[in-house]
Amino acid sequence: MSHLLAIDARGVTKTYGDGDLAQLVLKGCDLTVPAGEFMMLVGPSGSGKTTLLSILGCVLRSSGGNVHLFGERISGVREAELPRLRLAYIGFIFQGHNLIASLTAEENVAFQLQMRGWSPGDASREARRLLDRVQLGGKYKRLPAELSGGERQRVAICRAVAGNPPIILADEPTASLDATNGQLVTELLRELAREQGHTVVCVTHDNRIFSLADRIVRIEDGQILGEGAGSHAA
Image (cartoon, rainbow, N blue to C red; front, side, top):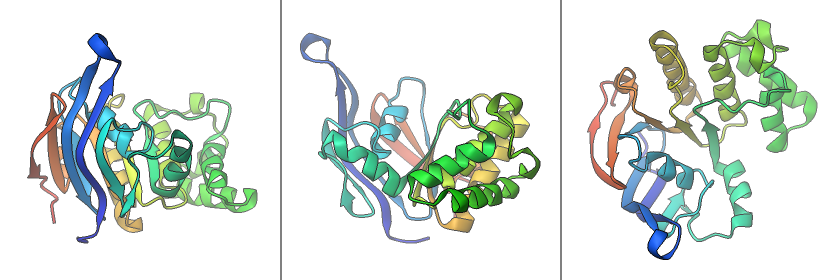
């Protein structure tokens, strides 16, 4: 595994609210993720894992500390810079898949590619290639409502990896899936990430998929507590 750091977060804090209503959600988190690692971030509800993932994904700005993605500092940037950083570095897989309901499977993936500068024709061809890769070749024209939960999450994975962003962030990607589909979706994500060299951080409380991680990092009460190796660790 590469020694290049995809993610280097030091002393990250996040406070919501002001004055007497202020709530400190992250309390000085340190997290480093080497390029090419498949890491799982685990912890109880309310531990701060989704907040940390959102900061790493350039969705939220931290209140303090420093975050670098492949050496570029993303903490302290203006709000207007966040969309550029997300496009440059991040593919996001949401718990509820967040597909656009009015777009087909192909269009959901192609739209992300067009956001990354691909022409419509090239975007459609690449979207179909990715959907073929996840055994959805016969369902290019299906709307999200016409797909099963596992199929929707596979489309969401295709959208996240489309255009080869170097970092894939997944927020509870198996939460709405049964054990079989949860395992399949996670194995697929790991396989695609390995093929294309992505770095993956997966927030989860699903201990059924822990064995697929290179490393498991635990967060509790806004602090990183420790880590261990998954059974697939290199």
